[in-house]
Length: 117
Image (cartoon, rainbow, N blue to C red; front, top):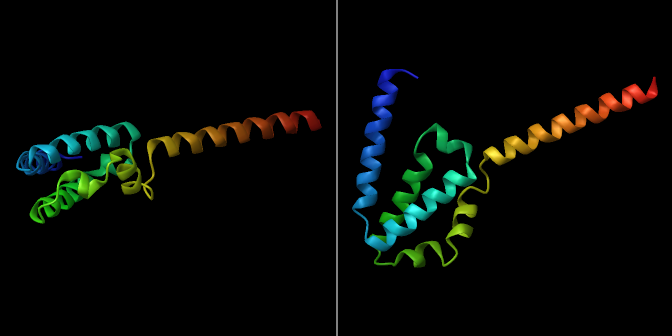
């Protein structure tokens, strides 16, 4: 990653934060909770840029424009809303799980091969 990419990323992030701060307070509160949730769950695409978060900002701006409260947009269960957003995304938990399965399979195969000898 070059310096230009870092600067571009910082500019994008600042513009994104400004969009969120322009939302009504209830939207800002829910957005912060969504952001925390997503950073904990860890969809891999979050490390590739802010596309997912920008999409949420777009969605929220549409909700504001149509006069809806934030929970009318997300539903009462914000965690379920987040899970739905990332249901087709690979998460770091998925990668860890796949890695663990491979290690276990390899260890079992190795033990099985030794037992046959």
